[in-house]
Length: 369
Image 1: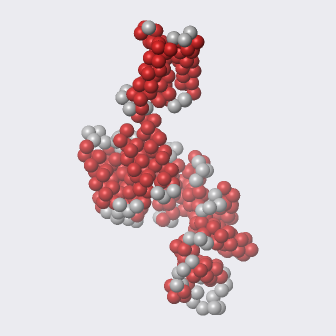
Image 2: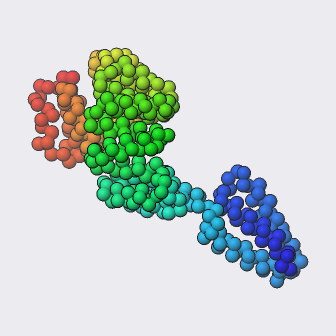
């Protein structure tokens, strides 16, 4: 009887390996059906012939193999477990449950210590919770323990230094990761952001252009370079770079907003209106875009449209106290007191003391646009 057990046992073992390693990916389905079917048919013949003693043995072997496979002895589903724990962490991260997210990202790394998405999101979790020292300790430990550190580890260290305000060290690490990992566009973006935060626009422009020369299809590099050129008031260059960014992808609102800003600040209000209205049709939840569109309408004396855009901006941001106050301040700084008053009143309703917003409306007569 023992030689006969090899058939169903082999079929079931192969089935389990495919099941755990591939999780029913399309290429594994035919193998799963063939091997599982053979095992089931073989055992059915035993049942049909009333050979119960022989039938019990493959059942026991099947259960033992099932338990064995779930202990990952052969590491057939390590990647899957790393992926599934990362997915769970991402779910909690999107719902701002950062403690649970951190646990799942760490569990993902326990199965695959070089799993890039988990490393990147773990660093983001430390940043979101402002646990910079803990994050740096964790990532520096991983960096020292790894003989050939994966790029997300020093990248995460640089992110944490940057977020914590240690710009000098962040710049040093940023230069290092660009030198050691020149095949990662994220490294150029991060170093460019570090230079930008220090108002070192020439160096920011230099590193971003270097990244673009290596990665001509990385749209984020173009967007970041456009931001730098805007701050340098190089409007024609900014318009060209941001137009190139939109030629590569129209999936994100940032290039639209930056291009609209470049047109607006260069005095080309017609082009600014065109690009911002195009963006508004696709990205209606981006407050800065609606603020800029309101400014375009005001500059072109389209006051009815400005009112509509501002009302939409109000509905979009009215539950957020900090954003409402910021918008009241922005409108007030432009002496657009009609709109400033609308947002100031909402800020009071949300709990901001009137004494903190009195300066936004200097006198009742200042209500013109």
